[in-house]
Length: 198
Image (cartoon, rainbow, N blue to C red; front, top):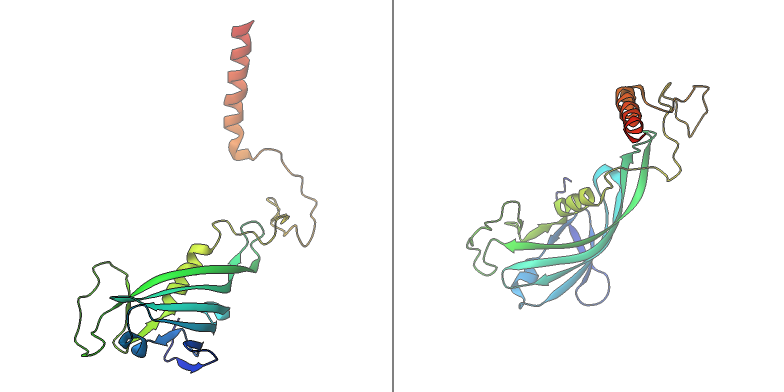
């Protein structure tokens, strides 16, 4: 998700903000606060594919990082594995990620870089980008075999028509021809077993 800037403003109680125009949060002031300081942000954005991302995140200042926790709601868009039609479905994401501080908040001097590959960091502008974390959580939440609805009839294996939209006159074979040689083996082994018994 390409985001250029974040515009933040107070929306009520102390430490509560709205996150607009991207999924970047400037944490410069929170980095100067004591360990344990907490701020909350409302997320109301458009994510990848034009799908909305909404919810609330909490940022906790720790000794060497900002810990982000929250619950976000979005939608997934996928192709049904039965009928191949595109459909959307709701996703709830429970986010918990640590953003490592890479510069000293008071002097700006560089700190040790995280050794873990792919670790999230507070960037040189003292901002955290939730976009990549949200993208990864969406990928993990997607079903392995997406189905548009439980009673999806799928495609006709003979003519390829979508059986949810129309019927066809194709004769449905009870056994896929590719499995016919295995059926012969099974039938042969049953006959031998009967001969041995009696």
